[in-house]
Length: 74
Image (cartoon, rainbow, N blue to C red; front, side, top):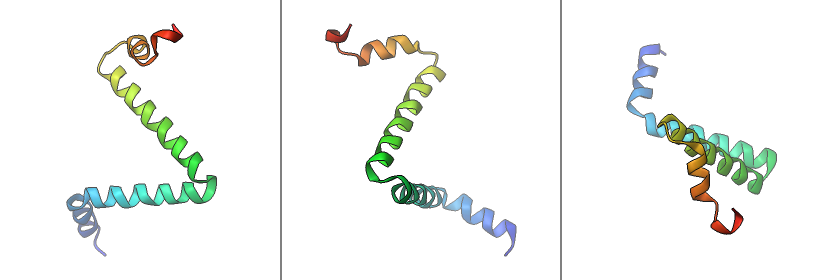
């Protein structure tokens, strides 16, 4: 196959390719480490992404954490 045809297909179907890739990664993780450990890994990754995006937007990480922690724990 021609490389240009493959790149054109990938460019037109970015969402489908990303969905297949994420589904493949999820299924491999479930088979290797188990369902609940996989959910925990995804949760931690999403939390890291959220906090990292806030830091990229020049927000103070301590302010974000203080908003998340209940007043009883302070």
